[in-house]
Amino acid sequence: MKYRWILLVELIILLGLGACTLQETPAQVQVVTFTPSISVPPTESNKSVPSITESPSQTESTELTATTTTTPPPLSCWNEGGYTQHHQLFSDFLPDPLIFRVHLPPCYDQQPEKEYPILYLLHGQSYGDDQWDRLGVDETADRLIALGEIPPFIIVLPAEQDHNTPPPESPYGDAIVNELLPYINETYRIIDKRAYRAIGGLSRGGNWAVHLGLIHWELFGTFGAHSSPSFVTEGPPRIREYLQAIPDDKLPHIYMDAGENDGWIEYTLKLEAVFTEENIPHEWFLFQGTHDEEYWANHIEDYLRWYTQGW
Image (cartoon, rainbow, N blue to C red; front, side):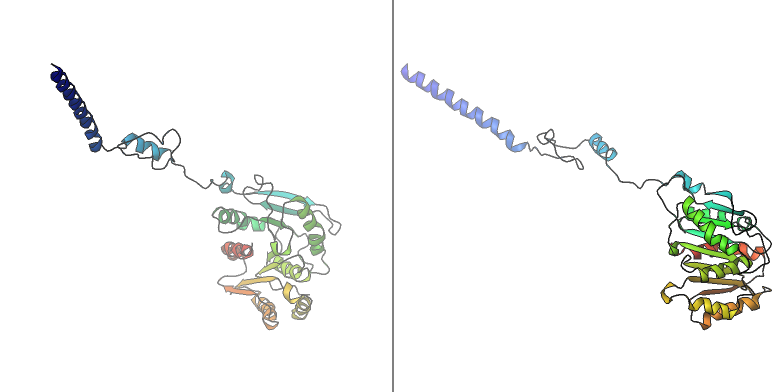
């Protein structure tokens, strides 16, 4: 009887060991892997969560919550264009108030901290402050600015009252330099440096641009003369005197153009010859056309691209 109990106990022990061996075997077959989310870093809550496969819903969730960096869209006013203001300024130099227009670039009001380059454009003989506007200078500027092809800038269009008197008898130039410029500087947000101030004109207005650009070189870093023969009081000898008074490192950028059938081309060529003979850097263009508004309107875009290229 005693031996039977011993055999029974041994049988029970053997059966227990066999059961333990059977429970360990499946652990060698089932492989568990940890797969963290592709774009979400592991956190304390997901480090210990095993995942054998990644479900489609998890993948879609990851793609939808991915973070991207985008460039903020431009202000809506950028494509709406600028606007023009009409002014008159009482003058100590002129018998009547100085009438002028100011065209402000797109988003001028929406960007109160921004300062702008400035371009003064003078009209031709017998015309007024509306001539450049009528030729499309404001629309052309707004279009090129909106396209990002030229920087935003301010345009000033002053009117001349006396269309016949040349300098120095005419006080128009004194009114522009001593009254209009200070008013613009105080009223509008401009970059008050000569490199960011240009003056140009067509026909008689171009004569004024040459005159003011040379004798007031400290104010204007650039001037343009479009179909301009120069004043009769400022022939080659006087132009040379003006040039000799300008330091070599302060010479303004100069642009000249005219139509090949311009009735004043002989005098325009004499002015250009002075710049060439004095070795003054300048750009000179002889295009098809004559001395009329059709010619100038066809080259408005050329002018604006040139004036703004250094801004």
